[in-house]
Amino acid sequence: MRILFLNQYFPPDPAPTGVLLHELGEYLQSKGHTVEFISARQDYRSTKKNRRRIFRELSALGSIFFQGFKTQRPDIIFSASSPPCLLVVATLLAMRHGAKSVHWLMDMYPELAVALGEIKEGFIPWAIKTLMGWAYRRAKLVVGLDDDMAARLKEYGVTAEIIPPWVLKPLIASSPITGAESEPDWTWIYSGNLGRAHEWESLLQVQALLEERRLPYRLLFQGGGPSWPLAQARAKELNLRSCDWKPYVAEAGLQSSLLRCLVLVVTQRPETQGLLWPSKLALVSTLPRAILWIGPVDGAIARKLRQLPHTGVFAPFQAVLIADWLQALHSNEGSFQPPVCDDATRQREQLLEKWDRLLNDLNK
Image 1 (cartoon, rainbow, N blue to C red):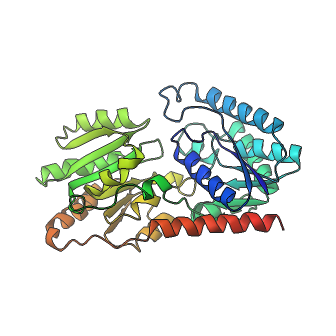
Image 2: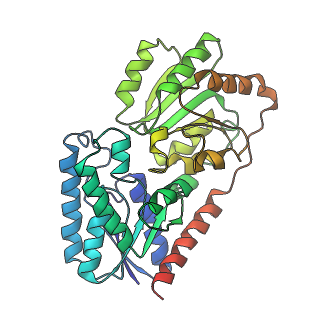
Image 3: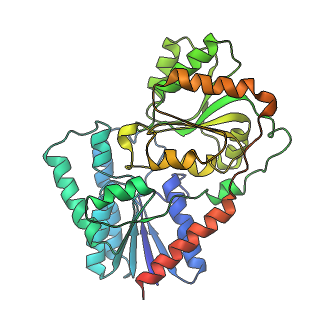
């Protein structure tokens, strides 16, 4: 079976979605399938990517379409969600080649853009939703990331399979826990992209309370993203003394950097529930550290995290409750036992095998 993967980014670019799809492609290739990757050849971490974003995305769609139009006929055209409306391009290419369309939904547009206030309700999002609905229904297989996303797809008349992201292979292969890393300091860390869909004001308010209570916690932002300047300005306004900012860490050192911290933070704005899935969840849920979730408290992510030990689940702006939870961890320092987590390698293999089964079923 010949499978053509479409995405805005692929390695050597470090975009997580591109790396994820590339790993899936390599696995399918090891199972005897022929795999080809087509990207827009853009830079995920470019400082220019937020300037005239619509032109960048349209350029990416055009580049992917023309490359896909000229390629050898595939049996399956496999698309993700970057750039927005890539599924529409994938559907047109599937019609051109007589191939089956398979879509792994990572971010749901235009709903996500409307939820974040990037575009207003009106004709444009209506037209995009109409196009996406047509493309969803023409796909032979649509896969979402959790139950909330599957529920959103039902509004389009689509029944979706569910496969979440796995921990990327370079992270699994990175340094294991050593003696030094098994004794974390009193740092709670937000690592990765701080985008528009991620809540950050609550973190700063909590840190202000912790400093007021003279607790030894340090808040560390590690990574970057469009919300960094706003968050840094707000931290300065609050006169935070124990709030640090560090750049992205290479994959080889990411796990070690997280294991040096006591609490791993994942956030999401509630209005984006079911429209995306924070990719950092895959890694942090397999590490022996406490997890702090700030986001929707009644969704699929919250329900799953409540099953894990040493996990705090809170809505945004519950600063006092979050500070109390962190203070309780500090008070119980002697009794804190790192939770036993699922094996990342086993999870990865199970999810890759599920993809292989689903794609083979399409070819029967």
